[in-house]
Each structure stands twice: as structure tokens, then as C-alpha cells.
Length: 64
Image (cartoon, rainbow, N blue to C red; front, top):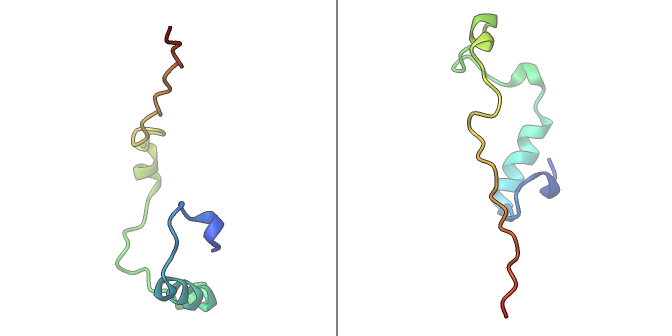
């Protein structure tokens, strides 16, 4: 992960070190036992865009 894939805020040196350490781990070495599996039945309930709010754009107004 590079800083360009994150938001505009910078990562601390500790966060960068943690990400670098995680990046070296093999997928099999990551314990995901505490994460529930998403089944086909759960995916069927998914709805796209329900947690996204559109950005309001305001028209520029001229003042005289």
C-alpha cells in the first residue's frame, strides 16, 4: 500500500512500519477466524450505494 492509495492524511512512521510488516505476511499466515464468512445468502441481501452520500454541488452565483 502506498500513500497515494490512502486519503489525504499522512501515515505515521509506526503505521507505515505496521503496514510494511503486514505486507510481508503470506495470506495463510493471517488469522481470519474471528471474521464471519460472507455466504451467498448474505451477498443476496447486499445493496450497492446505501452507505454513500452524493456530494452536493452548488452552482456559482454572480453578484452584482
